[in-house]
Length: 231
Image 1 (spheres, rainbow, N blue to C red):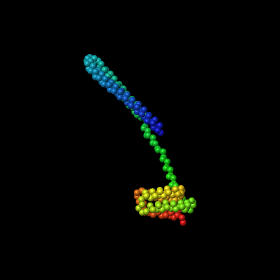
Image 2: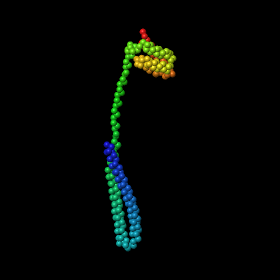
Image 3: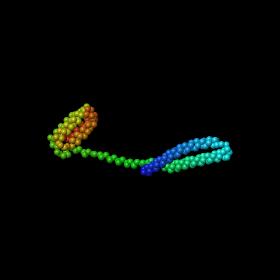
Image 4: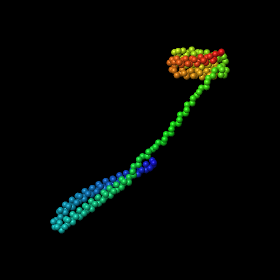
């Protein structure tokens, strides 16, 4: 479609250029015809003046009438020739105008349909495995180690008092976790500490924790302390 449109444009430009050349030639010829008319008019006036100076005897012989008739005939023939030439130019121009190809509208480019967006993957819900009793689960924590872990948790409980700052609690959680890691490299209590840390971290460090968060975390920590203390 685009190639056809460009081809038609080329044909139109070529026809318009040819028409322009013809119009230029017509203007040149019309200028020449106007000059010829002027010269004929001057010559006619000169002839008519010369006829008027012919002696009366020759005029009576019919020379004046014949000369006038001849001049009129020549002028009529010249006028007919000029009109014929103009009609020829007019027909030529009309033919060229009719032959100019009709304008072609630019092809409409239809954009390719946009594929529908791929459905978003369903969120994967990670269900944390239940944290079992640290001592009963593996039995790898000795009573002495359990007491040390309980002590670190109690230090964390001390910081969870009303009006405590989030930064203070976060620092204690980091310290307690580091000490517990020295006691047992891996233990389920680490998961609980990370959970509590996530709750506290939502509050700016210089802001006070809300009472409901303090009570909730303290309750869970005290429950874990009982599990690590020997019966």
